[in-house]
Length: 202
Image (cartoon, rainbow, N blue to C red; front, side):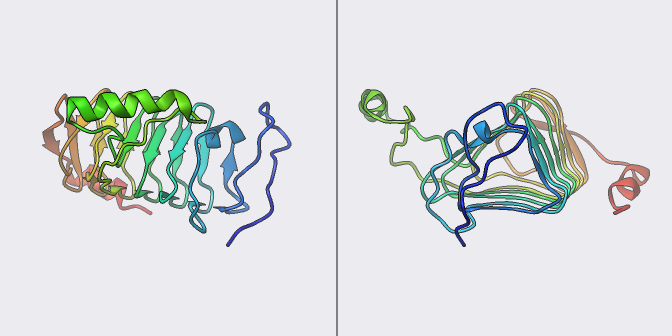
């Protein structure tokens, strides 16, 4: 459902919230600048659950067929979300600053094709690469904590209650209730029963 364009009374940026954004009345958006690269044409292309919040530095780089979901009380603090298919952030998830969640690479692996795509970028507004690359959905499940500067690559699911260490590059699925870190991210250890009980408290 498309809604009237909305502004934020506290916003420093003279922008609007996209008409196809569904934002719960208890959710918080710090600035409309987060939607500078939001281009989705889908109905309800972005959805904020109860109490969900995005803060300064968060950027939704969402292509024409992209869709993003933020679960209840999810908190995103300065992440870049690159989405051409679907990215889901579960309830009570915590996404730290400079995290990148990407369901697409946007550029071909083939060098000559990549050069041609980069040559097209200067003629676009906004100046964004959007090569013909398959997108694979990303899912961050409930109660996940992703540390700063981490990168979650296309097709990855980060399982419920897991913790991703700062500056990790996550290339494969993370099992539920697991701590991972590194580049590429590796399992450090499963969470203890006490830690799992805390994650399941809600």
